[in-house]
Length: 67
Image 1 (cartoon, one colour):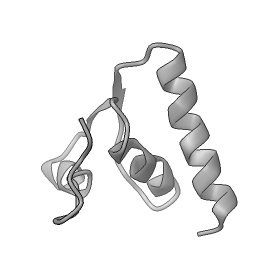
Image 2 (cartoon, one colour):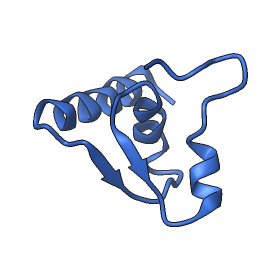
Image 3 (cartoon, one colour):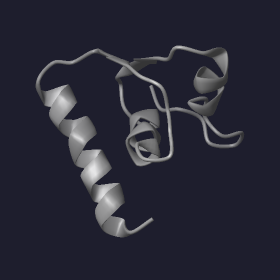
Image 4 (tube, helix red, strand yellow):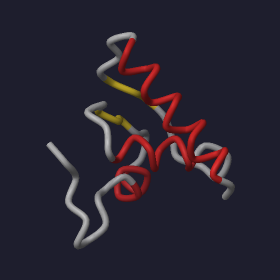
């Protein structure tokens, strides 16, 4: 993925936070994975449709989610 995609995804998350969004509903997928990756480090709560989608959003071992 290019740096532009990462920066754009981070910008999406920052904009959602700036508008006071607290919860995001969705299903992770290849075309939106960069946004879901950026959400890992945010305060936004992500609600997915399936348990497998939720497991993809868990922090990587050794990389705890900041609080």
